[in-house]
Image 1: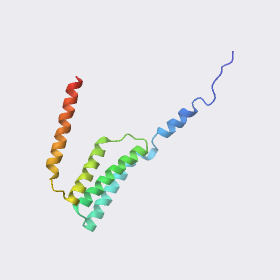
Image 2: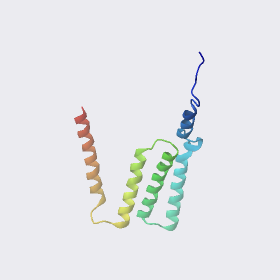
Image 3: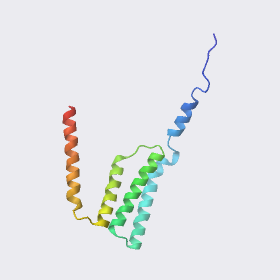
Image 4: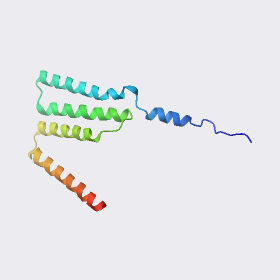
Length: 125
């Protein structure tokens, strides 16, 4: 009896492995993010940009690094996504100055989130 192997066994696995393996330069992505951060801060200082614009720039850079991580098949860092969004919210808040203050609203949202996570944990026990 002759061993019969289906054609192209492992061919798709190799292609999948190549497509999910991050490139060799992926470990330098944080350095690129920090480089953009320092360039942005330097530009902001030279041009004397407003605090809101500076915060929007920092938030954009933080989120773009996470988009690049996703594109390079690296794990998304939720902490930095949240930080980036907070910078963006702070920048919009500073630029548009809505009638209600940011800090109390932030504290209420944060407290609600923590309380809900506690309740969810207690229910699942």
